[in-house]
Amino acid sequence: MSKEYNDWTKEELVKQIKNLESKLDDVLMNNDNASFIEFEWAGNLGQWHWYVKENKVKFNEKKVEAIGYDPKKVGKVGFQFFTDKLHPDDYDRVMENMKKHLSGDSEAYEVEYSIQHKDGHYIWYYDRGSVIKRDGNGKPLLLQGIVFNITESKKIEEKLRYLSERDPLTEVYNRRTMYTFLEDYIKNYKEKGEVFSMVMFDIDHFKKVNDKYGHLVGDDVLKRLVKLVKEEKRSDDIICRFGGEEFFLLLPNTDNKNAFKVAKRLHKKIKSMDIPKVGHITVSMGVVTYQENETIDDIVKRADDLMYEAKEAGRNKIKT
Image 1: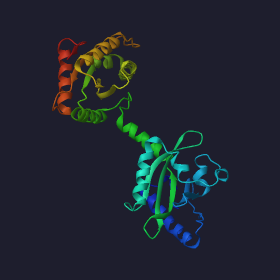
Image 2 (image 1 turned 120 degrees about the horizontal axis):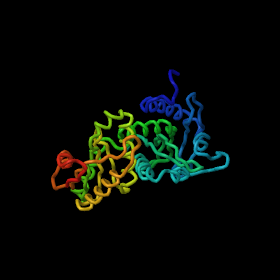
Image 3 (image 1 turned 45 degrees about the horizontal axis):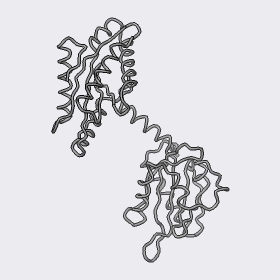
Image 4 (image 1 turned 180 degrees about the vertical axis):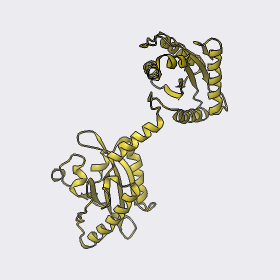
């Protein structure tokens, strides 16, 4: 083979699975007991057959060994043996996918989900199956499928998503992700009337810090500032780095009066923070609350204008 199965794209995996399904069809034509065939890229993959009327699942050993069970001890199992172990966030989606295929509304049952290992952790699977036998009324009698462990690729996917959403230095959300949050906040305001506010803050004279102490010290200042804000913010508040030394604190379900209280408390904490080599820093803040029919750019500009008003007024101030 040209490369390892772990390196395949999803499209390449589906192609291989379809080839294997053809082989399984040949086996089933000659053996109603659904024997399992060997194939060179077995790796971390399991085969299964579900006899719907009897609710009996037949599987090769890899299917249950992968989630920590001894196939010789589990005995006869039904569909629920596996579905009961689905992650709660995946359960409804998987059931709907299967229901849609059983009713003939989709070509195949095809889904990704996480399932609980016997010791408690979860494993990600790509699962694909199809009805291969129906009764005279079209009701499904037998499904065959193949399940593939995609935990490692999911870890990579999660890491890439994390990196795409975050500022690499401070690891808080970046500007692009902030705009996604604001889209949701505005939608909730329009649909549910949920008010939200924002605090934009900028480190005063940050260029002087970089010029005097160097960019490594400047980076340390940014990270210490973020650490303090994380410790002081409320659980639902979200901190984002807008660029350079500019940050936003998003305040869901918060009116202007309470947003100002949050900003005032944070402003005081930042001013009292003692930073190695640098000493103390101050920030200028702009506090805004969403107004009817504003766009994201509108509310961001209002916050930015107020923050610069604070700077023009001598810095180390809050404007709202």
